[in-house]
Length: 98
Image (cartoon, rainbow, N blue to C red; front, side, top):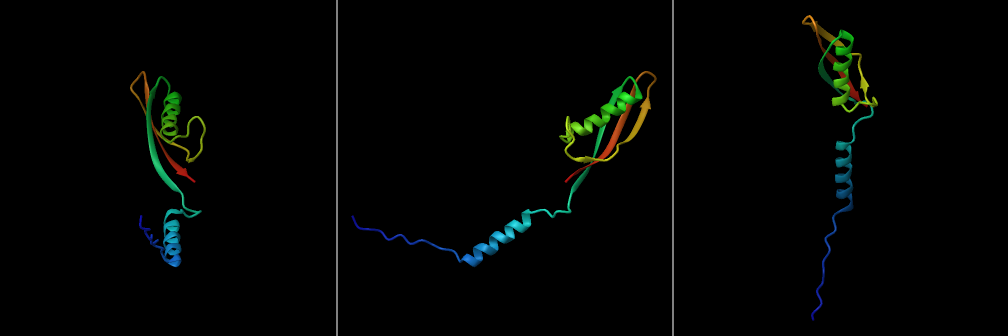
């Protein structure tokens, strides 16, 4: 059987290094950058305090910060109303990963 010569293609090492460096600098976030989002939660309860607690708990749950808070969450702002027997509150807070 005749032998086959296999020719290997070798890329220029400088071009490979430049391409890797460009790819790494695009994917690495800066140390000072943090991503923050504003989240909202709403809940109904028999007391205003309970409705506030539950609406903030919704924010913690949907952002993956329950039962342990792993991100920074601002103090929530609440808007509440009563219909006579029940309270409905909505909470708004800023959640920052970083």
